[in-house]
Image (cartoon, rainbow, N blue to C red):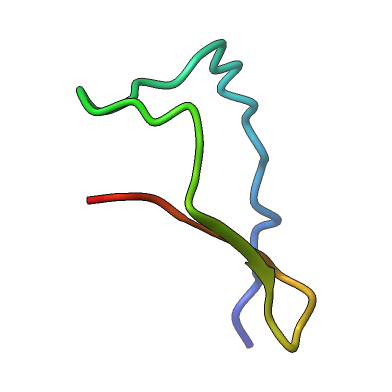
Length: 44
């Protein structure tokens, strides 16, 4: 029988993420789906 090794979790400590060149401070529509997830629509 194979012995499994417990994986280690490494924290990457990402301070900030990059955004595309079209930064949208506002959105057109905000809605919640049947699972409770929040969705926002932005202009193209």
